[in-house]
Length: 471
Image (cartoon, rainbow, N blue to C red):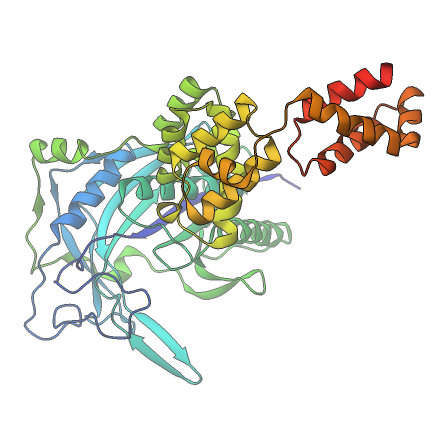
């Protein structure tokens, strides 16, 4: 039996965060909005209503294209993509086809360049709401600006596709172009999957898989569909060019319809819209709006802070987290800041469901807290207690330590007494240590910490224990 390789191309649809829809003044926000409240004659296709292009959507698409190393075309054209579906009020979708806004880019994914064929603009459809035997249509989403990012076929595994999608989401979030929230539908994708014998130069028959609304779904659907195609070929069958849907609950792909071609959509230039014409001055201005992008930030963090690749990946994934880290790292040891952010801060964010912008632990407060631990003013358990207070109330770590009496006990006289009492109360542990079982010293340290309500300096406690044990 031949060995097979997977060939994958991705189509990623990203809802843009604009104030209004793509071709009308209706609010673009549609999440948790009562059905059919953000609609007008344009986005519901009433006779005589004419579209007007949203300039901000063009800017955000060009920014994304530039961030993905694409060339911004000075002339692009909208077309009508004709198909009939209940949530498409016009009976066609306005989209860019032959002349997209951005072309021929790439994005680096795990050391490999994945080609971007095009980044273009279109409008989103409405949404069907199924209730029992009926289907209702909500047009709030109809006409929302939708950016489509089309990769080439250089992805070779579910893991690569997962990493590619993650990189795209990072970029659009950094640009403020989209929330990239797949669970809400702000970012959706389809995967075009085929298999071929290893070493073959011609492509196999591709199958499009839809309904991929999470990173987990992308990984699982590609793995399943790859296995399905390989099994079919090994049994002497042929792969048909169809559109499949991903059934998350069953964990399988299911055939939906035969795959459409561009001829099926009967594309032709949108007669109600002029071509989009931009000059180099406009493109240069848009390029100047780009922030530092994730990969550049990661490289800078590695050079400046000396952190592990894993920590850097976590820190730069979210722009607000990265900014918070840098603000604290300007005043404290970067590695210690990274530890606090990726462990304690992230744990609290997850448990409480809080966004970064709403937290009460200011970067300077975290830096101050780290300084108190490093100077020996408080120990690690006390630091976690202080962090808990900061999380709820905010404020100054030093003032919290003073108000709650959390200062570390480093007085040898006071600790010497507690050490003597621990040794006297635990003759078995003393005997084990003197017999060579050094692990028992941790038990004695714990007893002293308990007696001092966690305030003792652990390093000093161990030193005093060993002194008295020798004596």
